Length: 209
Image (cartoon, rainbow, N blue to C red):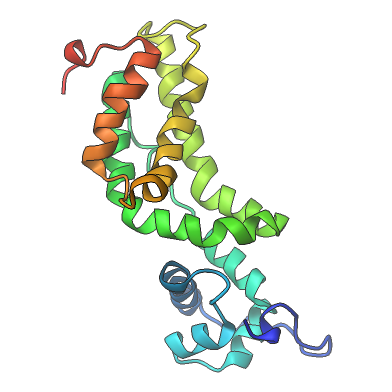
């Protein structure tokens, strides 16, 4: 890792804001692609500059350091992948969540693994990672469970309700480590019906497909 990646340029170098939103998004996309390909430690400002055909000084003037650029890239790609799901039943919502998460796991899982170690050593990076990739989905899954309670599909004191989001998002990260395979749609659907439904008292045979 280049020493320039962990330190800012001299204090007399002014920050500038001449980069268009479209150009900034190109930088963010390149950062996330490189993270997925090689990991956080191998990511360099030189690599981002080469990928985006710009001068390295442009990146330093705008973001100052590699951690700041990565944080900005994460914030720029905050996605609400599950918030739109509302099938009318808890079982339907969880099956659809499995489908959506599975469809994204090929890109989201490598990014999570690339950043996890570095994030534990950087509160700012950890916060950005949680805000961009984790908290929106936790909130969406919790909302599904809450709606299920309100409809009477599960009881308010259901012991498994608080663990649904941890189960779904946790297995997405665990399967690559345990089996060297991503948690794709088919796997997550089986997981939801075989592990999550029983913990909630839902019967896959009576909740549709």
